[in-house]
Image 1: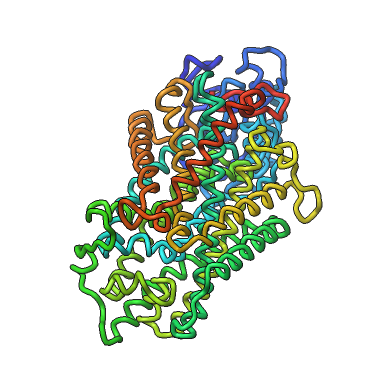
Image 2: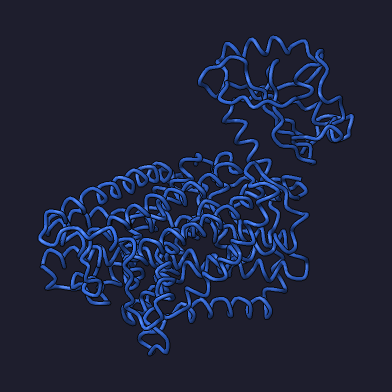
Length: 627
C-alpha cells in the first residue's frame, strides 16, 4: 500500500473526489475490471506539471466503488486496481460496459486510455523489464499455469524417482521415504527465498543478475560471472543426467523383454543419450511456438503416471507370492549398503529429491516469456515444489510398500533399472514394459524442458557478454518457425551436453556423477545471490508482487543459504564410501571444480577487462523496478 505522505493529493480521498485521481484499499477479489492509463496523473506523481513523461505511466482499474492500490514505483509507475461492484466471474468488463465507461469519462479533464487485461499485462511486464535496462525481445506466451508446467515437467516426478532410486535405495525404505520428506522441506524453503527474488527482479538472467545487483562494486562482477557459469553447468549437467536416465530407461525395455539376458553396453547407452539430446534440440528449434501446450500435456502425463503407479503397484504386488511389505518396514526399516556410517547413508539418500526438484530456477529463466512474470514465476516455483513434495512422498511410500525387501538384489537388478525390476515383480513382463515405455516418454519431455531452460539462461548470459562468442549466441532466430527464439544457444547447450555426457563411457559409477553435477552447480548459483541479498542487499531489496513478509523473508533466506551449503558438500561425496578407487570416485568434484576454477581463472586473466555485468539494451535509465 502507498503511504499517505508519499501522495501529492489528499488521502483518503474526500467523498466527492473522482476515483480516477485517488484510491483506497479493499479486499474484494474476482470482480471484472477495466484498465485505464492516465498520463496526466502520472506526470503529477513524478513531480512534473508537464505530461506525458517517457517512464511516467499510471495503470489503474477504474470503478466508482472500490479502488485498490497494489504497488508503486518512483519511476512514475503506479499500479492500482479498482474492482467493479458487479460481481460476475470475469476478468474484464464487457464491451457495453467499456463503452458506458468511456462516455462517463469523456467530460473528465484527464487524458485517459482504456486497455484490456492482456494488453495491460504485456505493457506492465515490458515496463518492469525496461526499468531493469532491457527491452522486450522474447515473445511472452506463457501463463502462470504454463510456467508451473515447465518446472513440473523438468522435475518429472515419477521418472526422476525411478532414475534416482540407486541413490536412495542403499539407505533402505527410511532413506527413500523420510529422506524425501525432509529434503523437500528444505528445498521448499530455498524456493521461498528464490521466489522473493524472482518477483522483485523478474529477468531471464535471474541468478547472476541478482548477484550483480546486490553485491558491492568490488565483488559484483566476479561473483555474477561465477554464478552465470555455475548456473549454466548446472542446467546443462541436469540435461545430461535426464537424458542419460532416459537412455537407461529406454534400454531397460529390451532387457525386460529378454528377461535380463541382454544389457546395453556403455557405448550403446551413450549413443542413445546423444540421439536424445539432438532430438531435443530439433524439437526446441522447430516446435518452440507449441512448447507451452506441450508442457501442459506433460503435466497431465506425469500426474497420470504417478496415480497409475500408486494404484497398480500395490494391487499387482498383493497378488504375488511375496505380497506387500508391512507399514513398519516402509517407515522404520533402515539399511546401509555403503561403507559410510548409517546416518550419512541416510543423508546421501537426499540426493534423490535434490536431483528431482533441482529445476526450480527454470521458472526464473522463463521470466521474459511469462505473462505477469512477477506473479507467475513465484507461483511456478512454489507450486512445482509443493506438488512434487506431496505426490512424491506418496509415490515413494507406495514403492517401498511394493518393492522386494531384498534391497541388495534390487540395486544389482539385471534389468539395469531398480524401478523396472519393481514393476516386473509386481506387474509381470507386459506391465513392466508398458510402464517403462510411458516413463521413458515423460523422461524425454523432462530433458526437452530442461534444454529450453538452459538455452534461455545461456542466451541471457550471452546478452550480457558473459559467454565466449556472446555476439554470436545472443542473436535470436528470424525465420518464421523460430522467430524471436534463442536457437543458437539451444544448439550450443545441446553440444555442451553431449561433450559432458562422455563421462558415462568411463563406468556406471562415474556416470552417476551426472546426477550430482546439476544440483551442485545450481546450488552454488542459488546460494550466492541469496547470500548477496542477506549480507549486502538488505536496503536494496524491494518486494515484488510476491513477498514472504518483512518478518519471515530474511530468516527464510538464511535457512536456505545454510541448507545449500550442506547440499553442495553432499553432492561431492563418493556414493560407495570413503577412500574410493578411481573407478568408484564421485567425478562431480572434478568436473564442477574444474568449471568453477577455470571460470575464476578466465575472469581474472581476461574477462575482468571486458565483462561489466548486465548490459542495458534499452534507452531508458535502468534501476530496480520496485523502487
